Every structure is written in C-alpha cells, then in structure tokens.
Length: 197
Image (cartoon, rainbow, N blue to C red; front, side, top):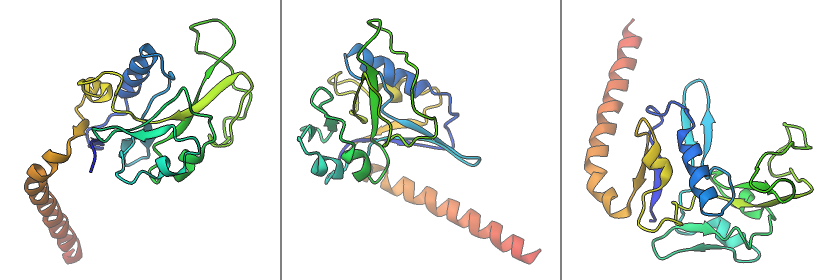
C-alpha cells in the first residue's frame, strides 16, 4: 500500500482552499496550473477526490508512452512535459482522480485565463481546444517539494484532509474499528427505536 491523502467528509466545508493551495504550489514549480484534487458535492456530502496511488495503478498500465511512473516512496505521478494528452489514464482510473488539464500556449505570458470554445456540458474527456496544451493532471503528493507535506493537507482550514502513511494504518486500525462499531451500534439502536414507534 502506498501513501495517499484521505478526507473526512463531515469536516469538509467546500471552501476550495485545498484546490487553491494545490494550484499555487504546482504553478510555482512550473507545472500545470490545475488543481490535483476535485470537489465532489451533493446535498448530503462534500468531499475531495484525489489519487489513491494504487499499488497496481491502472493509469500506469495504459499509458502508451510510459509518462506515468511510481517513485520509490510509492507516489504515482505524471511527467507533464512528456504527456501527449491521449486521455487513456482518465478512462482507466477507477476513482476518477485523473483529469485532463490545459494551459494556453498562446497569448500574454503568465496569464492563465482564456475563453473556452466548447459548451460547458461537454465531457472533460471530449474537450479539445486549439492553442491549449493538454496533459494528464493528478495528485503527486507535491513531489516537487521533497520532504514536504502535500499543500492541500497543510492549508486545509478544517483538517478534513490528512496524509495517510502505510505504517500508521496498522497502528490506527483498532481505534477505527472501535469507532465503526460504536457508530454501527448507534445506528442499530436508532432503527430499533423507530420500529417500536
């Protein structure tokens, strides 16, 4: 199992600070000015979707030019300068954690704003635009900053995000099992009381 970022949806307030911190850090490192995590929001839950850095990463297996690789610390990352934007990895990812990002290659230097020429309802997999270099964008655990903590985790205002280390999972297992058992018991008691009414 590799390191990854987990989210506690009950703490997330959908403020977007994690995405802003992610964009800023990667832009300063000369990478695509795109967030590496996406926000998923319904009436009941708000959560970030980010790469799970799978041990048998499907995205890595389908890349036709081998620009997705696993580093020694288990981080699955994309070489954005080599990516050809074929979108196979976005289709293969079971979590929807990879998307195609693009930065304009024409216009005023340093300005990342442009007007899309496709309808807003167009699927990201089908979008294509003249003058915009596209490549796969996914969480790289801020690998451009060796030894640092991922920026989204550092800047999350409600501590909804945390970096999960493989060696810590076994230590946390008993506490998580106890919490799940208590929640299950509370739900069972609630359902029993509803049946009695």
